[in-house]
Length: 108
Image (cartoon, rainbow, N blue to C red; front, side, top):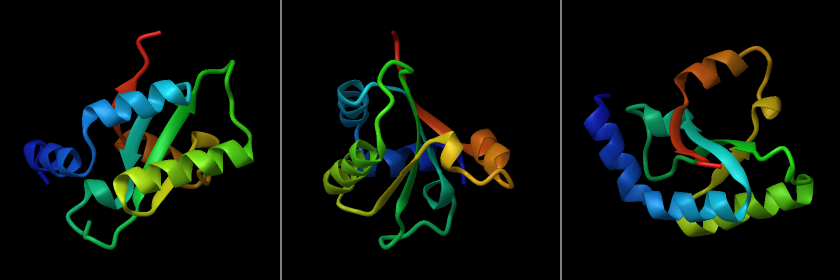
C-alpha cells in the first residue's frame, strides 16, 4: 500500500489533533499504529492496534491502561488494542517495532 493511501485511511479514522490531545492527556511520549490498519486487508470490522510509550514519570497501571483503551475505542468507534512494547511477544516484538507507523512524538 502506498504512503498516500495509508495516510488518507488513517486521517479518515482519526485526526492528528485527536491523537495529539489524547497523548498529551495521558502522558504518552510516542504513539504508533501497527497491524492490519497498515495493510490492504484492513476493513470496517478490523480493530486498531496502537503502540504507546509513556513518560517514565507517568506509567499507568493496568486499570488506567484499560480505561485509556476504552476511551480511544469510544473516540474511534471501533475496537482498539492499546499496547506497550513490553506487552508484545518477544517472538514478533522487533518486527512490530520496525513496521509501526509513528503518529505522535512528544515535544517534551
